[in-house]
Image (cartoon, rainbow, N blue to C red; front, side):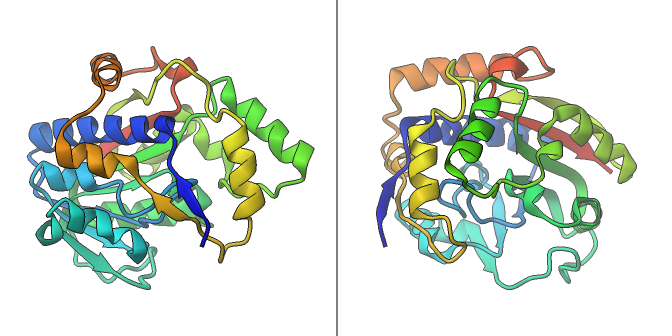
Length: 260
């Protein structure tokens, strides 16, 4: 397997997720969280919920990438995570309201039936559903589309219509969920994607069976607590002004939080 190191931009979005998860765990009094499905999107999967684990939640990962579970072990959080394999995400078999929060990072837009998926997420949660999604309302998006067209790469990033915050917000009441909060996160000041990394990943790992051997720098940063000063400063601005659409034009991600 070819080695691929997550670039500093990916490390930063993982840092912002840590902050978002900490705040939500505190404010929503979360104890049990499920991430479904939990594979990666142009990055290592099964590590997006580390922030919930650090905040004290018991985390269940559905259909994880087991090779990346080393991060939980390295952080000494094996007791905070459970893995569930080969589960039908539309009919999970979990009991009603088994979790305080059901959530996903980006990959839900790849699904064939997002409406049925959201209904199942609502069913297995006793209160909250959170979707974090790539934001097409930023200058990196048309460049990304151009890269695919220029190099002939197949589009493997899900239905782009779901990468618009207005559409996702409408899905929640359609599923019987009240939108509690929405906003833009991962706002570092540069467009997403930058280009060369995206081209390299598509060239080297275009087939579904091809995966890189990921090196994930955020694991060591979490382990030591030595986050760079620029990351902490940028993260503070990011979180302070996360709610609403103020930062949407330059944010790589947006989120929508709903309640039953």
